[in-house]
Length: 316
Image (cartoon, rainbow, N blue to C red; front, top):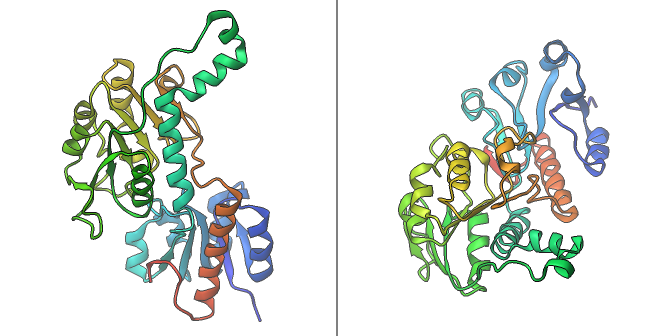
């Protein structure tokens, strides 16, 4: 039996590459020197696209694959996939939710604690010998017992909020509507109002056209000069220029960020700041989660080609 042809948009761990090669004829788009010529050659036979959340599949790539049936995303975010083009052609789209929720929520809290308590700077202070020669590290701020706003109460937002309860935090959240079972938390739908209420604002939204730059100058102004911002979602949810202005001018105490516009190339303004914690987009970067993400991506492909229901459909 002829193996289905799959367009692979980016590199994957070997534990995914090996079973993919065994089950399908893989066309490695990311290795092609002339990508237009490569698509013209292999596109007509492609029935599936295996991609990552950061790479997606744009309208041009989808159009080059007239036999395309399904796009399986390795990651929870699918904003880089042209969903409108997929809906127009009846192309199924899947992602890998749930399996990365815990690691993303864990890193969000880790970034918050590190930022609040100056953990990175304190480690460097001890390691460099400054502790011995200059004395104790500068005082920081208490993390626990304050007000935490969670902007977007999806899977990851819920995971963050539940963890924050263990730190004695007062919790408020935004969502399209109040969430059942969250009566102990305060519902504040407006982003600026949520920021004004909060000591620390966790951004856990999915990225859509409506959420682009939802954290703008007004929201940052509402968060205030003693506020902290933690972004574990998508870079496009924050107006980076407004954020950099606020950090440079002392209108925000600090920010911890795992995602950036144009990553991995950061705006050099970030690297000059002492009040920002920078992470290399690795919230899901554990062996356990990456294996589970790859398995779910492959299981969705297998289900599609077996004529079975998709496990985690975005568009069925």
